[in-house]
Amino acid sequence: MTKKRVITELEVKIFTSNQLLKYFNNIPIEKIIARVLPSKLINTKYEKYLNFKKMGSSKILDILRKFPKYIDKIDTTKLKFNHWYILLLDQPEFINLFDVNKLDSWQISYILINQPSLITELPLSKIDINHYLSIVLNQPHLYEYFDLNKLTGYEWALLLVGNCAISNFPDFSDKCQWDKLDGHNWQYLLISNDKYIDKCDWRKLNKDQIDSILKHNPKHRSKILKLIKEYKK
Image (cartoon, rainbow, N blue to C red):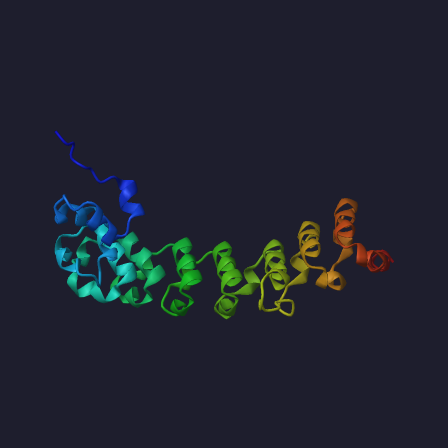
């Protein structure tokens, strides 16, 4: 007796929908459809086998992330709050279909990193300082929506390092509150970006921090030592 062929999860991931249907031609098509991500069958001759109204939340999410026009065919009451949050990362047009005030700081920041056009649609007052720094580092043109005065010295250092680490990153040095940077912040900044050597208050750095900066900036050694000497006067 021939043992019945079983479709494994691995095979479902490996084969495309058409290959699955051809390879497992002795298995009822409904059973195959049930194991394949529905988005793979959209716009194919197998779409007719999809029962949109009976789909669970995971399959609804799979379709709407790729094909938002199908929202009228689907029972969206099955979607929970976190599903809508995930959908926004791919389809910002769903912003008005759920209560954005339920989003937490991390969720709002992650949405804005992926969908910056939603900046005026989200409750920015809920974003804490660490998260809006992440937003500015990833979407620097959004900085005008945030109060940069809340940044700590370390966070300013991170932002200024971005000037040399990220292509087309804006220069925030004219907005920086330099007095907030302590010795550790200056060490981190000047090791990564020697552009601000003249801005440094060398009185805040100890010997180890200065030695570390000199080690990473040998071409500026004489200039740094001269600046240190001037600060000691």
